Length: 252
Image 1 (tube, rainbow, N blue to C red):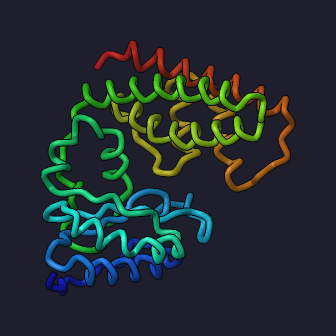
Image 2 (image 1 turned 30 degrees about the horizontal axis):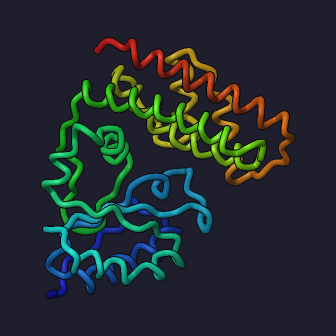
C-alpha cells in the first residue's frame, strides 16, 4: 500500500485529544496508504463531556473498499489504540454511508452535529436523512431498550451493581435518542449529554432526572444502596416507556 501524503487538520480538536489522534493518523496512513480516504473524529471528545484519561476517543475511518487486508492492517493497531483510549474506528466506505442513511439515521445525525474531519473530505456534511426513517429507528431503539433493561434485571438475579451498569448503559443511549427526537420536531439539539437530556425532558414533558443521575455514575461513582438502584430502575423504565409512547404517536 502506498502511503498517503495528505496533511491532517487540527483546528477544533481539543489539545488533550490531539496527541492520541496524531498517532492514529500516522499509523493509519502508514497501514492503509491509498485505501484511506478520510478520518473523522466524532462524539464527546469534541465537547465539554470529554474527560481526558477517562473518555474514549471515537473516529470514523472512510476507506475506498473493505477487505480482509484492510481489516488486518487496522486490527494490528489494536494495542496502540487501547493504550491511547482510542476506540476501534468505525470503518465505512462512501457507498456504505449512502446506503445506510435509512437505518443509521440517529447515529449519522449525531455525527453531523458533532464531528471534525481531520484528514480528507468530510463524509457527513452533505448527506440527507429522512424523518420517517429516524422516527422508526427511535421507536425500535426505545422498545429494544425496554426489553434489554427488563431482561437484564431478571438476569442480574438481585445483583444490584449489575443493575446499576444496565442503567448507566441505558442513560448513555438515551442522549442520542433524545437529540433525534428533538430533530424530528425541528428543535435545536444540544451537543453535550446532560443539556440534551434536559432539553428533551422539557420539550416532551418527561422526567429524565433519574437518567441524568445514572449517566453521572460512570464518573462520580457514588455509594448507592439497593433501594437507590431499585428506585432509579423504576424511574428510568418509566421514562423510556413515556418516550416510547411519544415517538409511537409522533406525527411528522
